[in-house]
Image (cartoon, rainbow, N blue to C red; front, side, top):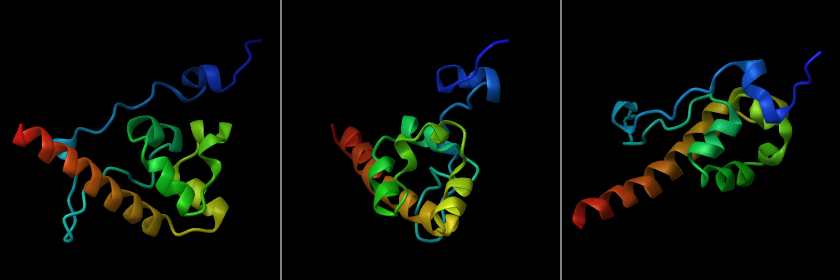
Length: 110
């Protein structure tokens, strides 16, 4: 019998999704891009957007270093921590829109 752990999580949960294409991200009425959605795996979010870890921790989600983060969605993690997933996603997306947007502007100016 094969042993499953975080090291071979792809065998358990299938192939990981690719990072969302920034050109196709939804933008809300406040101009905030939807980098992160409730159905995304915490581990994927941290891999794609490392700075999101800081924001998640400030929201009270210290599970980013937990092995469960490799297969738990943002929505599931928020449920465990008693947080509203829409609020957490909005805070993370606002931060990423501000920081990644500034990086894009810097690249255009050069």
